[in-house]
Length: 344
Image (cartoon, rainbow, N blue to C red; front, side, top):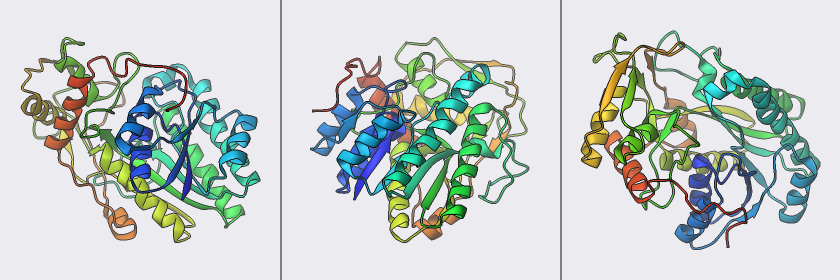
């Protein structure tokens, strides 16, 4: 299948690009490189034995997108492109709505103009907000608590309305929980801008000495060790989930939503302990107060993905930490080669 992947040079995008290439698909990556490095695609090409096509285009650039569609004639789109930092979304909401929501509308208009109506959308468990109970099923009420989560929710509504207006659209919406880890090769992984917002890359940067200690926000939650519990999923399992979603599109999915997680939660202290085992590093940490808006427990019900997509996460927390450490140890400063041309 010919697939266009927006944001394909990013963390999840690069791993999914690799999985798609290995599965035999023809790939064109569209990325503006604001949150990513083209070096990731060079490394994907090394791992896959062939390179994806690449266009440095923003999803809000409809003319640029149209030129890519005209040249490559994709049959389906996997849509990752978007700003993704919760804290930043609070301070810069207009940028998030313009990039994420308006950018998706721009993409859908171009897709429609070229008769491409197969879409896998990268959503997020943030659309659930604070759940009343766990595990979280796809039928839970949605109530995101920050602009980033609200952009994901709004996009889901746009896509659902688009399908209702024109049932020829086939859409699979994937609500990720907490992606972590890296390709086992150590060649591609998570390279956040500035200080990491997420737990595991923060721990990894402490491990290589870029940061002094892990801040643990809250130790008085109603959990076994007092720290927050989340559902962490290995990024390669997540990439495989996108392959399953593409197969579902072939079966005329209509409009469907799936959680992608492990169905199991790990506390902050459990993750730190697992990383210590994987790395052999001390990983100093300090307990501090809770962050506003943080919740005690969040993990997915993944039964629907298992039954309908035939997909389940396979890697455990020890494997996630081992692969994350292999990447960080080999790339202590992330992708240092950051050219702006496409992969060779």
